Image (cartoon, rainbow, N blue to C red; front, top):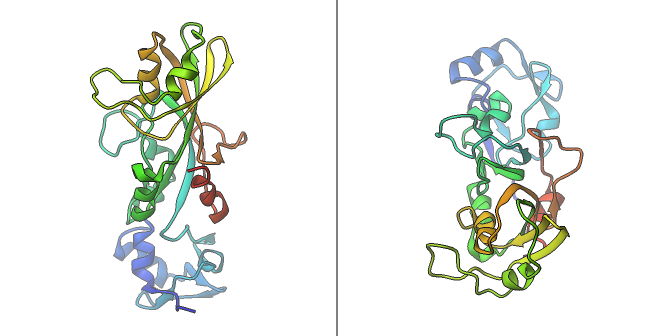
Length: 246
């Protein structure tokens, strides 16, 4: 069995967003960092990054934040943008302030546009991020679509054909699944991530999307009890569901 990697305590806490090296050192020297109930007062001490560390270490009487390799699911509300730089409300403002200072930084796994709500993943694991968004991953993503006008009735066959061309593009879309829910509502499942894809698909068949909500990535469904704007840490079993159905 390989040994767990180790890191200096002051670096660990600084990278988790607890403050600058000086601020972290002050926390440590004041006895606010406990490991297995005992104060660790030397910032140079190397700490083994074991899976149970967050359960064994406290900072100012609170459990240590999740270690690097963090994966979150967030129920993105309408009106926030998946960006670090754009103007207006950003999705990162929905996270705890300390998590916004982590190094490596948390990034969204793909994007939902400002007017689209629903299931969004965030992680500080770059390799995992690219594994999920890679076109080769072929991970299905399901959207709950509300439309301006009634469905025509031929959307399922058009979307499934693999021949639909979006305006301004020269490569047809991959086949997509379609399920009508009512006259003006449907579920659409796609495996690509082209710009405003679902909205443009319905525009191509003469309709207009008035509301768009992603409720599933792979076999991972957005929980009913996760309110808009809220997040929770994904466990290994839930993360594995992302790759089911690919």
